[in-house]
Image (cartoon, rainbow, N blue to C red; front, side, top):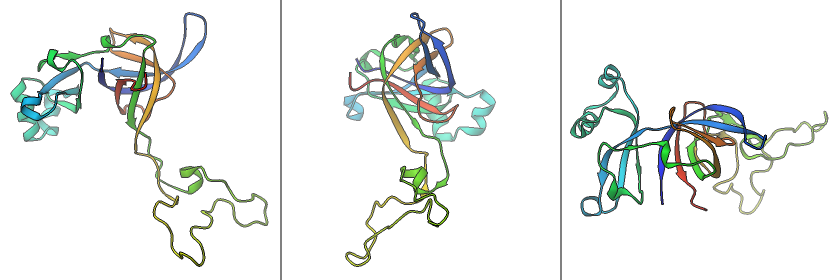
Length: 213
């Protein structure tokens, strides 16, 4: 069954497993996410639910939420949230507006896919951005971290589109597949996921059961 939840990256730590192994984990605050809108085949052409995560304080909502979104939340009677995301789940028919998605739908040892926006690195060269090789590092080479030849000298006499060059690195949507849930903390809405996940601490994450299981 398809299942998903919106979360926020808290940071990394390490835990001991029952057999004594030390495992690095990422702590993710996942949910609770309230169903804000339910989409059906009859009205929208497909089945999905729109969920909200990270509820605003009342005074912050007045300043940060625009009028169309304010009306959208007011219609459902749900407090405005910072994030809205849509999921196409198998059990859409069972969900209604106001229901919550929580970490209880996941279990220890389960495989998941985690999507997020990678950390920004600003303007970088080809060595950091594309993992290209450096030039000779001896003093006389005079060429250490350059881009190298960008095109042929004669024919076709131009640089092809997509050539690996210097530029903005990071801030891209990244999905890491087949990560393992080490622990589910229902009381604090936390998922402890083995290994690293995309993005900085505090970054938004989408957690779904893996598509390769």
